[in-house]
Length: 133
Image 1 (cartoon, rainbow, N blue to C red):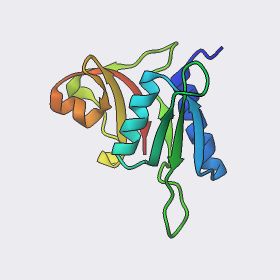
Image 2 (image 1 turned 90 degrees about the vertical axis):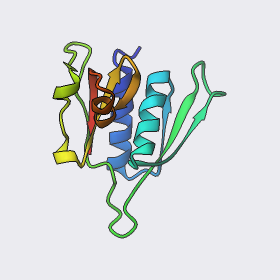
Image 3 (image 1 turned 45 degrees about the vertical axis):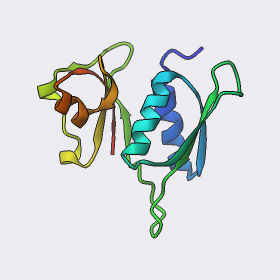
Image 4 (image 1 turned 120 degrees about the vertical axis):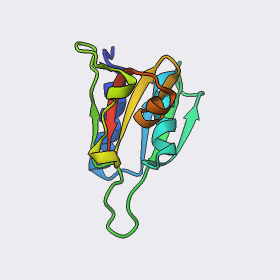
């Protein structure tokens, strides 16, 4: 039984990047699918595929992205912020800038999961899930 599925998602991606894997397979949920879509839209992963035939909830296959010349991973750090034991909420005006705008904060709002910049544009706050840079 997994207590924190978002931490499990981030840890699997982090471990796959450190090991130099091309693809990582993760059990799916609606929240994980939204986080995956954001990572793809922001250019942190190469591609993704939702497979509903494996297991009761399906899986997410994520193709990780690496620099063509140096072979360095695009995701330098992926860090969980709000944990089950200590939730971190923020208003729209206090959403943090990551690496002076080079990274993203993923925020779960009442309007869905979005980046911190999108949340500021829509003037909504919420739970800060993670930082990616």
